Image (cartoon, rainbow, N blue to C red):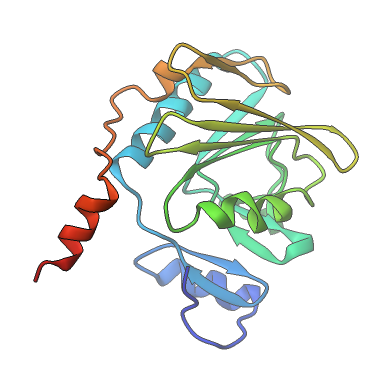
Length: 205
């Protein structure tokens, strides 16, 4: 992730720039950082999950939001766009803006090569400052693999990993379950090149 300019922006300046921008950016304590472009796999996984969630919660008091809704993390002075957010009850809006929420219970990120380290470490650390945040899913888009973090107490989280197609993910804090087969429905993985093949290709031209 590259910073657009080495200068400090206020949150107000960021929001004004974001409204006029042709692409989305995150705001992290004064810095504006362009977001990586989405892939077909990224979009398909987020859509598969959101569709199943929305259907499951049709008559329950939960709300599901996809990547266009912005999250404000007050303690870290960060604006970001989680891939999927689940809220219990009604959303709390920042400054009455209907595009910025404050109270996700579950956050889901579909990992990309350029941001997976950030999603696992710094972003997860920022999310943990949100009082309503209780569960975090990290979904790999290059292979069948999901990490599920759930809060068990103050500063205590547990991790469960999923990597078999016949497994099902059961969320801990809301009544919802999805099989990995359904989560990865229509997702096509790229063939993995051996190191030798990669070296040959890089040596051409």
